[in-house]
Structures are given as C-alpha cells and as structure tokens.
Length: 466
Ligand code: FAD
Ligand code: NAI
Image (cartoon, helix red, strand yellow):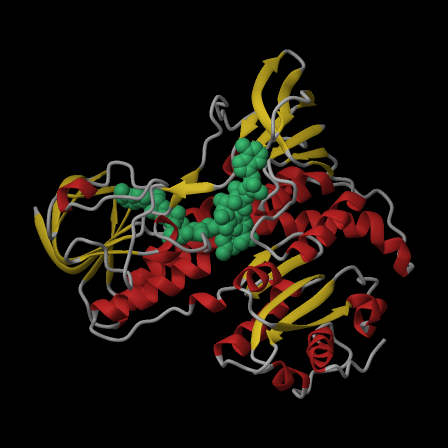
C-alpha cells in the first residue's frame, strides 16, 4: 500500500511531534513515524519528564528530612516509598505521551508506528507492527534524536552498569553509586539517588564539572554538591569495570595517565554524553553523509539532499528538548514557505538539581576568548530577602553586558528555582535589552527575581542591596 504526503517526519520526539503539529496546523498532509510504542521521544519517555518526576519527589523527601526542622516542623516516621515514586513518574509519562497522541490526531497528523527508513527521494519505508508500507512524500524530516554515547570496554546491562534509562528504573537505592561523567545527567540523577540514600562518587575526565557552563557558576555548584555529600574525582578516567560477587569495581587512572585508583560500587551510571541516532535510516539512498561525530549538517534545517530536512538532537546545536521543539516549528514553517527561525544565541540551559543552575547567552569564558569587552553584575541570594526568609540563600545571579552598548550578552545563575527565572533573561536577550532595561524594570518584592534586577543594577554600578 502506498500513501502520499506533503511531509513525513521520522521520529516522534519533541522535534518530530512539534514539527508534525505545526505542519498539520499549516494545512500540510503530514505523517509522523515513531518506532517506540509511545510518542514523545527520549524526553517524555526516558529523559526530561521521568527525571524531573524523580527529582521533584526526592527533593521533597530530602527537604522533609533535612530542612523541615529549621522551619519548626517536626517529622517522625519519614520514609521514602520508591515503588510509589516510580509509579508517580510512570503516571506523569503516560499522561504526557497520551497527550501528544491526542495533539497529533487533533491536528490531523497520521501517527504511523514502526521504524522509518528513507528509500530514495520522496520515499519512506516503514516496518511496523502492521507490516511494511511505503509512504510517498514531498518532504522528509529527520528527527531521529540521539542515544547514549558508549564508554569503550564497558557494557551497559541497565541493571548494574546503567545508562540514564536504567538509572531511572532502579528497583532499590544503591548503597554505592559511581557516576561516570559530571555533566547534566550525572548531576541530576546522582542527586536523585543521593537524596534517597546512595553514597555517590562522580568521576570526571576534565578538571571541572559541567563543561560549557560558566566556570564560576560550575565551581560554586561543585562546592554546594560536595557539601550535600557527593564526592568528586576530577581529571580521572575510567579504564574498565569489573563485575564481582560483591558488586562492581570501577578502575580509573589520572586523565593524563598513571595514578590508578579503584572504586567499589553497586551501580555505575555511564553518562559521558549522547550521540546522534541515525542507524538504518537509509541516508545513503539520498546521498546524505554525517560528520565524524554522526551529526547531519543543516542550513536552516535543509540537508544536502533536496526535500530532506533535519531537526533536534541528530543535527548540530545543544541537545535540548526546547531546541528540538523550536527547530520542529521553524522547519514546518519553512516547508510551508514561511520564515521559520530559531535564535541560537538565546536558548537556555537548565540543570534541575537543588539548587538549580540556569544559563542563557554567552559565558564569561566565551567573551574572554572572543576578546569582547564586557561589564559584569553579580548578586548573591544571601542578600535577597525572599531567599533568606525561605532558607534558600545558596547561589548567585551573574549578568554580562557589552561594555559600550550595555546590551545583555549572557546570564548565569545558580539558586533555588532559577530554572523558572531564566525565562526573563531569554526574553531580554530576544528583545536585545540593555542591562539598564532590566535594572529599571519593576520586579515584585519579596521574590528571588529581585536578585536579577540587583545584578543588572550591579552592571550599572548602582546595586541597592548589600
Ligand atoms: P528524541 O527525543 O530522541 O526523539 C527521537 C525519536 O525518534 C525517538 O522516540 C526514537 O524512538 C525515534 N526514532 C529514531 N529513529 C527512528 C526511525 N528510524 N523510525 C522511527 N522512529 C525513530 N532536555 C531538556 O531540554 N530538558 C531536560 O530536562 C532534559 N532532561 C533529559 C534527561 C535525560 C535522562 C536525557 C537522556 C535527556 C534529557 N534531555 C533534556 C534531552 C532531551 O531529551 C533531548 O534533547 C530531546 O529529547 C531531543 O528531541 P528529539 O526530538 O531531537 O529526539
Ligand atoms: P554531558 O555532555 O552533559 O556531560 C558528559 C560529561 O562526561 C562531561 O563533563 C564530559 O567531560 C564527561 N566525560 C566524557 N567522557 C568521559 C570519560 N571517558 N570519563 C569521564 N568523564 C567523561 O552529557 P550527559 O550528562 O550524558 O547528558 C547528555 C545530554 O543530555 C546533554 O547534552 C544534555 O544536553 C542532555 N540533558 C539535558 C538535561 C537538561 O537540560 N536538564 C538533563 C539531562 C540531559
């Protein structure tokens, strides 16, 4: 059987499903192929959503355990019910993946189950539960996402040696958890299991955590996570993992060789990054080549092959759900002949630890290496009235603005709830605001957002609070 479409999207993650919905809204006959049982991709099924559900539940537990007393609240018999937490997580995932299926239907998008493969210009073959079929289409959008980067010599069994997917499904709290990689996944999922009682050691190849984020903020984050009980082994690489009757022995040496050291663990989480997933996609049938790291290049989402587009984790840029979503929408608009656009200079990044870490725009390290002249404004939550009232004084806001024009260039924060607060600065960057614009904008008192305003006043040299 052959079906004809305007757009066939391969992959039903945040990139693919948002592209499909927008294409449907624009009146294009659209199909979205997904090989998982449910829509929503990595993000909804095994990424953003399940991790945030566990982060929230475990944070509530730790708050009750460690912070309630400071507010004069006595708790007795406190206990974490892991099965119930996992149930809550599954419920959130189901509600959202069902919601995506509903949205595709509402926007007249055909959801086709199975693995999609490009079979030459304008043709996509699908091998699914209902057998094989070939779709004819004017446009193909590749939105196949990413997969875990493997660590050579270490085999993931998703039970003892796990990826993020296994770490979201552990049946019991590991006594000793070793994280390989001090990036976003390691710090978020490491926080979950530490809060629930695991002894967590982080092994990181570089001499810092969270590469790519502002180094001053990353340093502060490491100090706070260490205080919370995480142990850090920086400048160290894993050379192998041995399975013994007692558990795992993680062998390491210094990043520059020698200084061998082993770590015992019950579970090891491999989180050294993700790589594009384009296995069996038939790229060769339309002459598309990937770069050395497996990414498909794009020019405004167009690949090198006529009528084939690419969005999300399998093309360049940050591997984030909102970046994939933004590209999905812009790509559908371009296919429909409109001027879809993404401002890559204003895509925020958030690490959902406690405190959270959030950033948008240039880091101080970027500006230094570009030789750009800039002004800095900083404000500590220690001097913010709401933070003090709430006992949430860890962290700071740091703003960077052009030395001559005062245009905001970057914002970096660590503190309770800064993942919500960063959107103000995304908007400021989109509107090319000056830091003085932020400093003169009324912010409600008492809120944590006043720290942003104070940091902006700091850029101007007239901070009001201590
Ligand atoms: P994906 O979400 O990976 O979707 C691609 C889909 O395509 C998959 O469902 C796959 O099954 C399907 N597919 C692949 N090949 C085929 C084929 N040939 N045929 C049919 N279907 C195919 N990002 C954030 O912004 N915030 C977060 O808090 C966050 N948390 C994360 C936590 C974890 C543990 C992980 C692993 C990731 C997290 N991310 C987060 C990253 C985010 O999940 C990804 O950036 C996002 O999912 C990318 O969207 P995508 O549509 O490009 O790809
Ligand atoms: P990452 O790129 O954030 O961090 C990987 C870390 O591993 C880096 O610090 C790197 O230096 C280190 N590393 C690399 N090789 C190593 C080795 N051999 N030994 C020790 N350390 C090594 O990757 P991560 O944490 O796996 O996350 C993957 C992607 O998922 C990220 O790109 C991120 O964008 C996305 N994600 C986003 C989240 C969010 O937005 N809150 C949450 C989770 C994931």
